[in-house]
Length: 140
Image 1 (cartoon, helix red, strand yellow):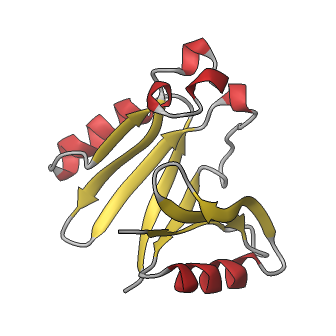
Image 2 (image 1 turned 135 degrees about the horizontal axis):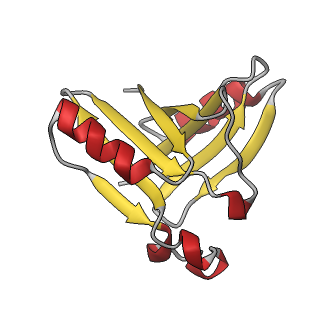
């Protein structure tokens, strides 16, 4: 079954924002991973090591609010309109490929579809209408 969840990008204050969201919605974080805890930590600026690489908070029974800190040191800058993605979770790599191929047609691939260090088959693209997507299958 496919699910769609918002994925937000912050300018270094993802943890503060998500503590606020947790106070509003309740619940506990499923994941809170800092850049210093990733295999790419050596390529991350010292002052960005404590920032959030990925955080997720369940909202209700079927939705997850997720986010990252977009690092300027990694040449990512945010403006209104590029500060969120729609994240699609699928049941299979084949379904992931089909959806990613469809969404990226006529658009731009920002992260090619492939296996990640966190164990997902994952890709990112911006469709021809400038909507940003993340498509993944968490291989079990």
